[in-house]
Image (cartoon, rainbow, N blue to C red; front, side):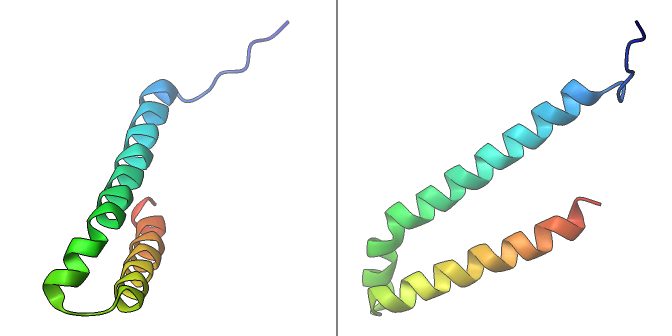
Length: 69
């Protein structure tokens, strides 16, 4: 039986991608938890804060994909 050879650093690549995905999720969670306080400090509505947060997440996702090339 022949063994399939993969990229020599495949485990390192997997670890880096996993850590980056985890940090991205933690960052999103921190912003969501802090949203009421942010909205209060900026004297705006929660709807405006949620739309701003959604725009930020979509924008960062769109620019993250080409940056990974």
